[in-house]
Amino acid sequence: MAAVRNLFLMFLLVSCLPAFAGQAGDFLDPLDRPASAVSNLAGAHLNAVAAAGERLVAVGARGLIMVSDDAGATWRQVDSPVSSDLLGVHFPTPQQGWAVGHEGVVLHSADQGHSWVKQYDGRQAAKQLVEHFTKLAEGGDQTAQAYLDGVKLNYKDGPEQALMDVWFADDQRGFVAGTFGTLLATEDGGKTWVSWMERVDNPEFLHYLAIAGSGEQVFIASERGIVFRLNKDSGRFDLVETGYTGSFFGIEVTPGAVVAAGLRGTAYKSLDQGVSWSSMETGVKVALSDVQALPDGRFLMASVDGRVIISDAKLEGFQVVATSRPGRFSSLALLPGGKVTTVGYSGARQVSLR
Image (tube, rainbow, N blue to C red):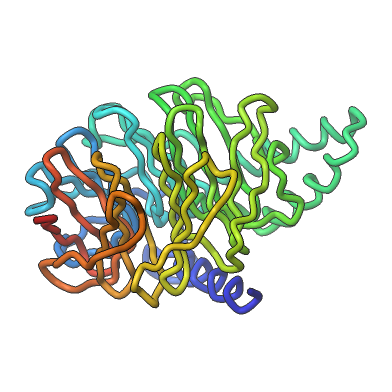
């Protein structure tokens, strides 16, 4: 597990290397520098994609945001206020969407991904979290000091913590989740964010790699085969062990099933709202980077070696879906009518489920 964790942290370090605006000394914080124009959108480095109604919105390296109105056949870049790498994007409604990434950045769009504003970043998080846990510790909270020490360590060299994923229940209530136990919530559409770090059974500050929900069910995918399940009665996320020992990179939640996917083609399912879990044979031996549910109850998964697989309705087996071109897929999105698009380090690909 240590090797896996080190590999993951190395990926974060490499992808977080600062960008420079010219000579040494001309450094401009990625949080303050808008994204540059990308000439080759077809082959751009993308990390996540989401459907905003009939539109696709993809985000990627150095703040890149691009949209497609023809199911991924063509793309156009839109302005982004930051050049931080963007790692996750979610639209709970066709108009309202959020994107997150390195340096703890949170972006918001109110017009189907056409324009974006920065709502929050790691500099604000560092100040807010230190003040929050200091106040709790001074008030006698026995666990607050450990969180305060962890937050100070995490942010001592600046806004280093990445937000890996974002999920909103509607256009007001949502979560952003990231490295070293970073979890923030909003109930006003991102105008204000509050710490939920202390509301998770995660004293070791494990990374949160994906978050998803359905109705009142919300799950976070993490390391060591662990998922965290929201307990609506206590208002906390409880730790759930699945029986797996590696990292989960994607998770999807429907009213009838929860599916988590991770290293070496590993996938686990729960048919009882996360109480019990069992492994699934995917036929893939490389990391599964994303999982999405189809309206008919089947699940799609993308792999880092350029495959898309689809389950049967009972989640008992998978078949490979033909893709237009190979690529290192990191995310996939479904549009109305069964159209699927994947994105990754070498651009976007259309996928047919026929």
